[in-house]
Image: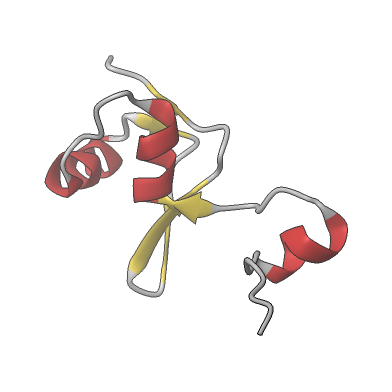
Length: 71
């Protein structure tokens, strides 16, 4: 049986990037060493990630182009 790699529906059909990704996915693409989840949540609450991540359900999501600002 042929197995295909599944992609998110919006990406598979149109090739567009998702509007939001999870905080952990963003951290993996932004930093060489991924910060701990507690650190990421602290940064969210301190306003260090711009634009501000949004909590959708129980999951924090952020725009792929978001940046970390130390101060």
